[in-house]
Length: 322
Image 1 (cartoon, one colour):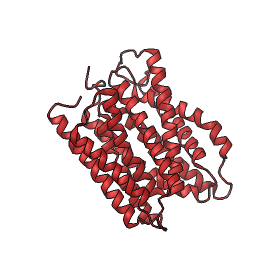
Image 2 (cartoon, rainbow, N blue to C red):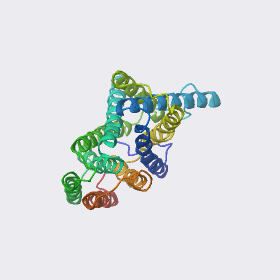
Image 3 (cartoon, one colour):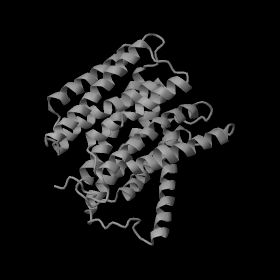
Image 4 (spheres, rainbow, N blue to C red):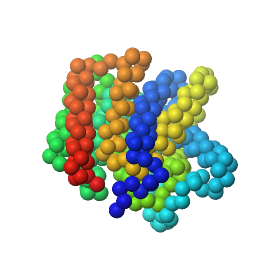
């Protein structure tokens, strides 16, 4: 089995892609929080416009690349053919998981606030990904990894149970955040498992996943309320455009490309850039407040996942990780 199925992309660049994606994602929740005040859009409608707008941008970029290179595939690196059934399964699973991941995350932000929703989502993600990678791809967790998982779960428990009356931690928001983390784990593991065998174009895969996600979201978004309010429409469109362009089209394109050479658990650890930036934005600019219990839970959770990163690095150095 090849460890780098997409040799045209160096591992260092793959890490940079995932890092940029995580940084960009940290701003999406803040933009969503602003949209909830005045646009009239709910989590499902917001996720649909994010996915559909990102899809349109990706298609435009792909068309421009084809025109510039004269290529019919949008890439100059020939790839071995991927079996049709495997490609269809990968696209369907990734697209549905993408839709659930984003919709549940925005629902969590609406229910429990940007800082807490993001921290729980991204804190639970590495735990679920590490366990899933072990079960589905044989990636070893080790004793240190087990302790890190336990620490992360402890941090989540503090976040859920440790709030005082003024805290923004709410059970519904926590549930949405954990659902979002689970869907993100499914999306990442599916992309990693199928991508590491070669034969898939990450750029085309991203477009296909977005198309599936948008189709799944459309009827649900229409039932919730698809159109933003007429007043402050310019502000709403500007925020939607930003969400579709930077933390969606650009970030997911880079993320899926990076997963061809970056391990699933490693990518999840790098993604911790997101909750740090999102929490900072929430406290500094959106007026959210972190209570002592929430801050303690956050610290425990992030420390546990940092320990998981150390375990990951040591395992790679000893040649234990595949």
